[in-house]
Length: 75
Figure 1 (cartoon, rainbow, N blue to C red):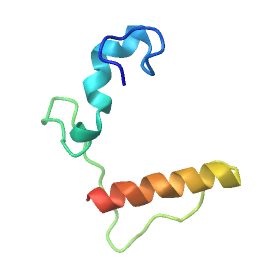
Figure 2 (figure 1 turned 90 degrees about the vertical axis):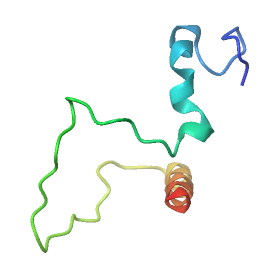
Figure 3 (figure 1 turned 45 degrees about the vertical axis):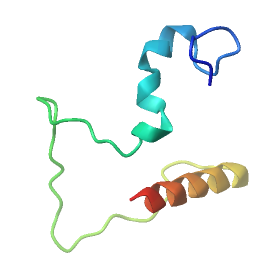
């Protein structure tokens, strides 16, 4: 990744000020609590359905699985 937001950079110039949010080394850092935190109240002894919420191609499913496995490995 280029560090100056020039053409050829994978990050469009208008989003370059947010580049730190997408750096690999920041992937394991959680944001601080804020006024916009919300709780998700779960129903005891219930589990979500394991259904796709939208159709994915075989290639897209493979990419999604790889991403999920990588995220799980990070903890």
